[in-house]
Image 1 (cartoon, rainbow over the protein chains, first blue to last red):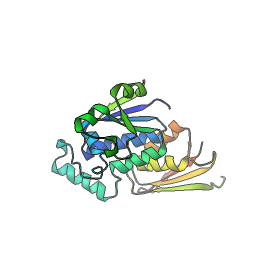
Image 2: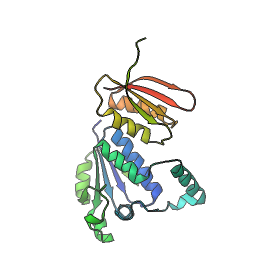
Image 3: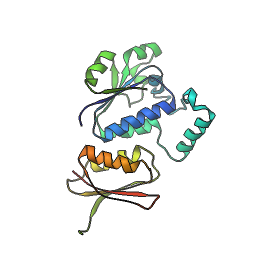
Image 4: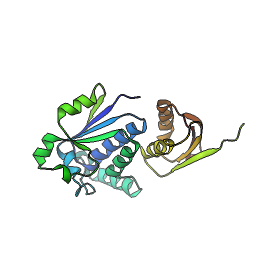
Length: 137
Length: 78
């Protein structure tokens, strides 16, 4: 199973990043190459000094959703950043920052968490994605 | 029936998806072909996930059981 899985992360809330981390780790466990492309608010959440912060939830979560997410965390669910670290340990996971979003947010590569492997443009992302599936979150 | 000698054990009880599979994939990596891996999990999704993971990766799910709360999987390394 060598076809790649390609995720474009746009949203920077903890629930959407958690969903993305689960999809990444699952694909990595199956031995698939995974390319993750960080744009806009998702990229902002990967700043080294903020990655462990509370990034809020998507608006549809509401107060009840907040309660469910908190309960799972208290029960010991790994954070999205920790889930991604474990996925990277399995190998085959490459996380790249979108160069346009870096400019937009005024971020330098040294500002980013070591989870991020590098910076690239959308053309390089598509080239690496090849014929693999693409998921936008 | 021959005795099954477990070479590696993964305790994934209490872990939510996808961690039982992630821990299993990590543990299986250095194992020698033909040796056995035992996994304990409480995630109800793990029944379908372990079947799918074994089918995709070519590892052999040789035994599975549940007491209703804990699922036990025995996998022979490809």
